[in-house]
Length: 326
Image (cartoon, rainbow, N blue to C red; front, side, top):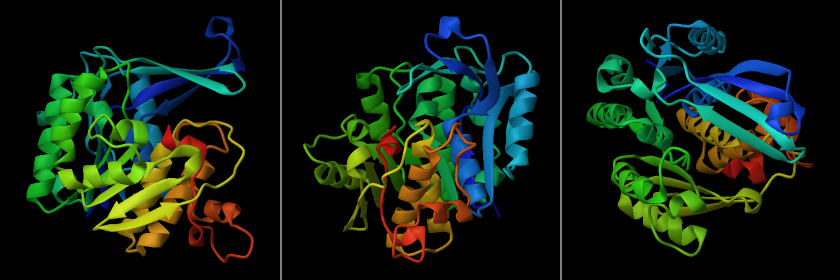
């Protein structure tokens, strides 16, 4: 049995090593990135068994994705190779020391051609959690159908469905996102969203009202990430608040994925509600302290580095960080 199955597009990632306008960059690092595969890696590092389903091109970038995920212990049997389309690309740079810019080149990519027939149904139905994001809903009509088909299979098999809104304005307008997200949110058990993302789906002036409105649509667990103000979890009618961790932010990309991975990993491990939220916040905070979309995702021992004074374990103190909401 697999603990977690994720579904979506992962891409090759070029990171400019020089701060400033991208046109002046001459040196790039090569890696991979993708919200869903980041969560899979995050859960794997925290002791869970994770798998990723997606399409890549029949190219070197596709092979890079396969080897990277497999090297992190992620099951890639659900990866499909598409000979008719390339692996998507991301370009990440720093316009200033404090401003990270990420640009996507995914139009007509292999990942955008994901469709229901690509799904490893037996893998989904035997998992404990299926995790999807709004990104895949926005990629294409066929990718959206794949998400809906995966959710239907999971629900029929009694598999918990988790979703991170992960709104990307480059992929769709707020109006387009609102209708699709509202329909999908009603079918999930766990929902992660920033305050802004929550307002794409429901109305509300404050995070607790937003969480309540989202919960009323169907999810048992709603987590609203509030950046520098922490996070709120509404689970089965119980409200929990998280205060922020104070860390030095180096790279905010991937913090939200780390947050989701921490919460899911602790849920899979049967941890108490307070601990799962604390670990989510600690994982999100740790992720921003180093470079990389997934490279900075923590292992269990890493979380002790955020141990507050006077506590025995970092996950005993609830907190989050500004970049968790990104």
